[in-house]
Image (tube, rainbow, N blue to C red; front, side, top):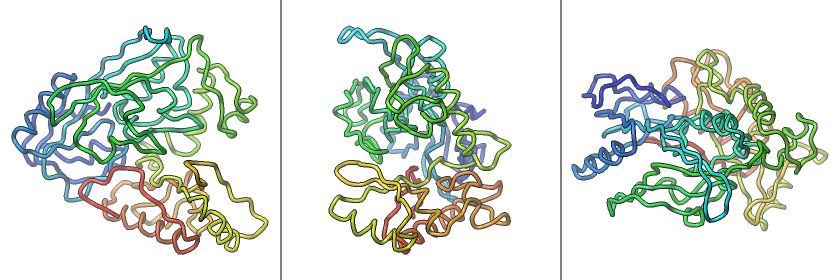
Amino acid sequence: MTDTGLDQTASPGQHTRLADLTTLRLGGPARAVVRCPDTRTLVDEITALDDAGERALLIGGGSNLVIADEGFDGTAVVVQSSRVEFGTGRESGRTHVTADAGVDWDELVAATLEAGFGGLECLSGIPGAAGTTPVQNVGAYGVEVADLLRSVQVLDRRAGNLRWVAPAELGLGYRTSNLKHRDAFVVVAVSFWLNDGGISQPLRYRELSSAMGVEPGQTADATAVRDHVLALRRSKGMVLDPDDHDTWSAGSFFTNPIVGADDAPAVLARIRDRVGADITVPTYPADGGVKLSAGWLIERAGYARGYPGPDSPVRLSTKHTLALTNRGDATTEELLDLARDVRDGVAQAFGVALHPEPVLVNCSL
């Protein structure tokens, strides 16, 4: 969790630069910043802001935010609650872990492994706070939050109360939920099922299973899986490192596009016309359609790693074309210009629309 170093409140111009609270290191000022070290403070602050008619921007790890250069005309609420508890659910006898929304996600994953459990290892190295993971149904290496989510505690801002919500109520889908882009509910805690005996989830992602010498679908030692996942993510610039500008990003900027079953044959034919009939187009079944690889499409549309070049303040990562990176002195508008360039180029080449994964605050593509 990012420690802002701020007092409980901050006046305009006093350490309110939101760039300091995001992994992109971009974004203008907020009118004020408050930090909440526990759930009670978080609920009280949001309630007070709502009662005053003040806009609130919730920031956990800041890894899924693209904030405008003009900043945010309201109060930034930094979620820093940190409680973690293990337990056994009476309804199933399975072990679970419950964490406050402000708990650093990767630290939570590590804590579950250190306690002798598995399940979350494929989600190692993902930046951000635990409370944001169900909002976007975070996923990596063949595992999604939806696979292990037990329940989510939310603050209902309209009713003014806290309640636990079952996964079935959240509309969880590919990198989305009915919590995303909605302000009525604030996640204050999350709970996940775990595997006993330090056993991983089944390894569905071929790159990972191959690296471990395990057949797809088999399980493995969860700690060993975490080590391999972190190594793979580091090779792609997807583990935060203040000295590596390839990690100054919001992770994967675009979601993998899903094409409807009826449209898929024509889309795939257009792609093959462009890249060559003998090229295998990576596809995956998804939601009654076909999921394409956004990174693969970006590269085949002519956008190489490091595009547009070393003199640009914003670039595609030199390790992974899905990450748009700040090289140190960029602006949000420059980042958005690059995103528009890539999005429009893929649409022109293949007729496929790319959509941003991070939340855009006071800006748009």
